Length: 119
Length: 107
Image (cartoon, rainbow over all chains, first blue to last red; front, side, top):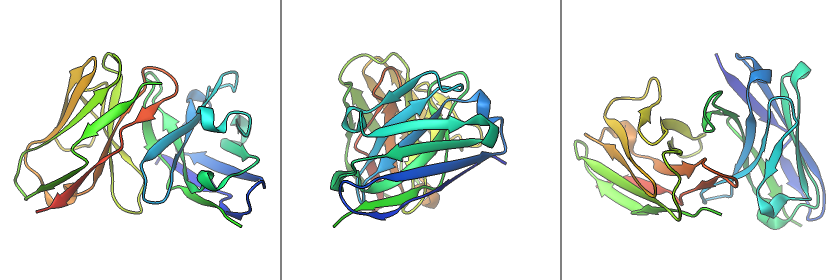
């Protein structure tokens, strides 16, 4: 059974940092691109970042470039999102997601972890 | 960036109704479009990919069509389990972008 389990969310103050983790199981993690997608409370979905199977290619939405870093450890079947200089507008549920192996859409989502940025 | 616009934003319908949701892209995305269903407090679930391909396990009452800039998601006979919010998403180019969502409510 495919599983993606996020962790690391919580309440932080503006300007602080947080690192999200996503543990993958039930599939060969190193075969897939993976993503982070977020959803602010009561709002729609926003793609945040993608990373290639071997970590050699990374893409980000403009609003997080220079502040967030996506990474992965295939030996640990894990995906990460390092978030620095957090802002109130980064408050959201962050979903870890798997990208379909031959096409570029998300075919499986984790349950999400809530990040709240507030003073 | 490619903008995705869904209509309507909210839709009130009854069980058994045929429901159509439209998604328009600000430029051509060929068929690189996916549809997701999301229920409150839950993660999104993939319904349709490549504009018209039905994800395995998704009921056949869901269908997708379109190419270029105009796409539709159709539910042929609305069931109680289908009341949810639906999102389109383009994956033709970065940044990936989603529509604002269509909430399907009980009439």
